Length: 470
Image (tube, rainbow, N blue to C red):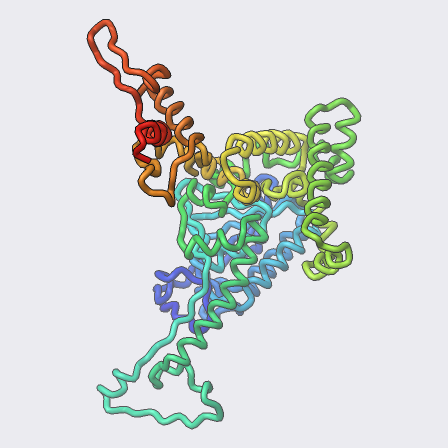
């Protein structure tokens, strides 16, 4: 039995600090095969180097098992994760390493949330092109913490005092036998925030959602479908469904397409008359043209753009072209790798749905629509449905007039206009509160009901002028 009490920067769910651990049986093989997947398990709290008690999984051990899976004949790798996270050191580096190794080996990489993938464990999941979660699975806790202990009161109660002779004013920051100063706390907070930003950027890049959206999650955790809605997973599915689903099996036809290159295979299908393939290619060309025009509209020079691309890693261009055609077809589409024409059809259907959703909210500003367009399709459906409708300026003025809150004649600073009066009356007529005849004359219907003229600010001014009151 061992308590998990790691120190320093941690990417760990808060309730896992101090948990009691028991060493279990050690796996004899680095991975096992299920369906088309070489399954690499990630279980328990995570540390950078192998734990002497072997109660924690280590990034070093995961890296070794992953390399063996890449050498296997399996066309895909599944990271089966059940972990609350752990140490920051080595975590982000391992995520990038696994992504690159899977691409180099030509393996499709899927992460499966086997109960829990929190904090550092979720960072490892971001190495995959797809994240699958079961209905009861939990994902998230995207953030960093640093646990500091202050035992000075305990020391005093025991009659023990500590004197530390240090070479610098910050050398003893965080020592449990020295009271934590405001300056020391601020310094630790800066380190936590800097590392958290790196975590946010990793998730934003992998999941194709904005870093601000990741920050807005406030390190919360999400269960099943809610994780999908938050953009942290691609779909809800059990592990048995993942490994047995025909959509996840690599057929001979798909393998042929993959060896050709996804774009060449799509072009071949289009040449043979496949309409879905034609639409997908058209979407690719339109997206690339839109991106080029957008870059020029923002005033970005070709030289600056090239430098920016290099800074972000031009060495990954081939991987992006081969492994993420969905991202090329639509910047907000899932980053799953195309392995068959069915995937092409799915992208076309998603693009059509995305365009329809965005077109349905013409009431929103262009900037809002542009931000919506970057969301995963599941999130887009939610925001389009939940975002309130925005009324036009004319509608707002008319509604104010209909509710008797229109500017009055007595206040020259906010004098109403004839256009506002007209809009207000049109709204009243549409709502059945008055009729066109009621505007200028009184009438009595066959039931003896008297309808008096509607008095608007414009009519009031006109009548007052006639009487010499104004």
